[in-house]
Image (cartoon, rainbow, N blue to C red; front, side, top):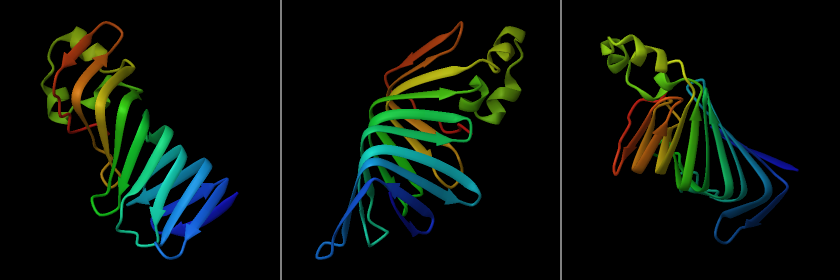
Length: 168
């Protein structure tokens, strides 16, 4: 494998091809990124990625994209990382698993829950499917957009458009 480092990204891939006239790098095979920003680590795997020597251009990811950030794990067919926005956007059949349902709610919402049954669900594993899922590589927040489904052991939530803004 070949490794390269352009802060805050560490890239490892089976094959790298560099086009000097375009400043473009194509990574294929087992492509692994580690994005570190303010002590937050986001790990990304894909089959193929295109990035540029000019680090402000977006990095595209294709084929079995997997993301791990803290207690959040997500998979999708495509993704785009923007160092300008400090965001990783996942698209197409996005599925995410959160160790605890509380991870997808704002802290203020969690504090307002009075019902004991509702509070018990906060400790349950949660599965989210969405059209898009955006991870902040700086804050650890995540937003789900488009058609969003949230499944827990005993509850299912559906929405035609959801923007969940806090998923630590």
